[in-house]
Image (cartoon, rainbow, N blue to C red; front, side):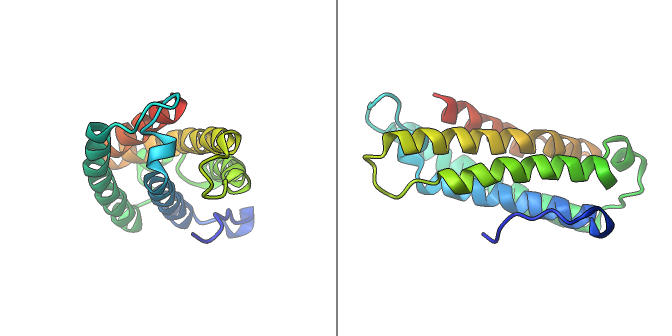
Length: 167
């Protein structure tokens, strides 16, 4: 994924910022999927859980559909609508939230370990950075789904990933 960017105040566009946030969420989900055995399917050296893996893959597919649907809704959204204003999904309030996501994501990029499974400390730092970035996405994602009146499946999937990354 291209570097997650946040425009300066004079060029900040809420629609673009939220679309980039959703693209970043998709990217994080894909990264977790790629390294799922190390990141979420094992705990304390236990073997990977095949039942959890099957459930993760099925839920991931639905979550990615939700990301695509949200991107389409953001593209068509009226950012002057009362719900969008009430949830502070524009201007400096949103820009601040995007800057928090950017700060967290920079740690993900810096902590990404090589594909060497022996780097247990590297994976620990990477896992923590992923959790932090997912947590930074919480507020804007929850506000966005509430303002657009959409179901919370993507929010719940993301929170489940946070729990698994914390084990």
